[in-house]
Length: 175
Image (cartoon, rainbow, N blue to C red):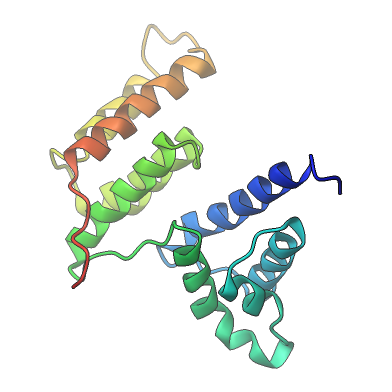
């Protein structure tokens, strides 16, 4: 790989780790082999954190350490998520995190909206904090039954994600 390819390779490797984290934070844990392979690709691309190296070097008999190490990797790369203790507060914090990931361009708006609707809104129910997204999704299919352009749908989901970030306070950091 040339040095001009290095930043793109690092960005792609971090994106892969972050995509794994989107499901990870809500219990969608990947197999240890998947985490280890992603860590190895990231190290080869030039991503450098202590836990990433450790995760990428795990042997088969150490696979049970992969979840904890992946959690540390997420923290070291700056996208770890630590929800509040309470179930409902944790659900709202998770919705805010996914919405932030949408706004920051790390999570596809349609995928993020689906995560928020299915993993938070269905469990939490209707509330003012989630209203922007809950109201945006059904509106996407309206307008006389005509198909809306993907850019318009993406823009509406992005606006709803921004509104969620504004309405849901960030979780308090533990002391």
